[in-house]
Length: 133
Image (tube, rainbow, N blue to C red):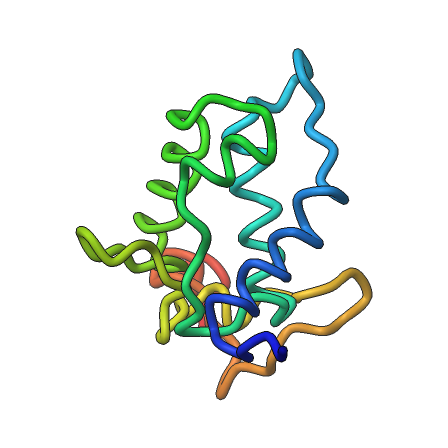
């Protein structure tokens, strides 16, 4: 019997690989929801979780990480607010097909250069006036 190769299976494998490797620092300076947020965001930026892939249910991920469902939901809400995740009531959460522009320019991995901009940002109008430009 073969296991179907679906986006859900890909997401579960990606997050199961992420979750055991994700060691939450309980009682640390960074709250648990931020640690989960950063781990999922990094997986999205690194291409481990591809656009359109369905994320596991918050209950299952909370159980896997041994945290409150509210903790996972807070992380998902932040990802949604920043445009990394789209949620559909009754259908679940999915990696956004259109990542935020800032994320596209952000380095995905340590040592990896950001994507080049079409032109470098110039100084503000005040900065230009002070510089005599």
